[in-house]
Length: 78
Image 1: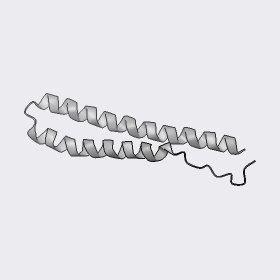
Image 2: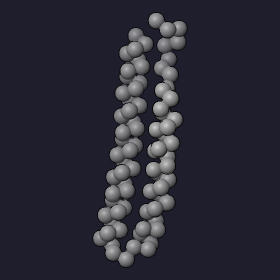
Image 3: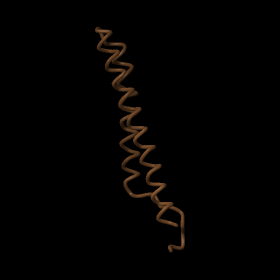
């Protein structure tokens, strides 16, 4: 049994957080110009909804990955 039972974050989490942050920044920067400059309202609505869906999916995947990693780390520490 290791001395420290606290889970250590894997090295890939820094990379995963960077992907999430840049995706959210991209969509936060893209949605306002798409709504202001878009001439076809139906297309703008679809683009915005797709962006919101993408951000939601990425955040949910990040949270699910964190939960799975924590559960695996806890079961490995026992």
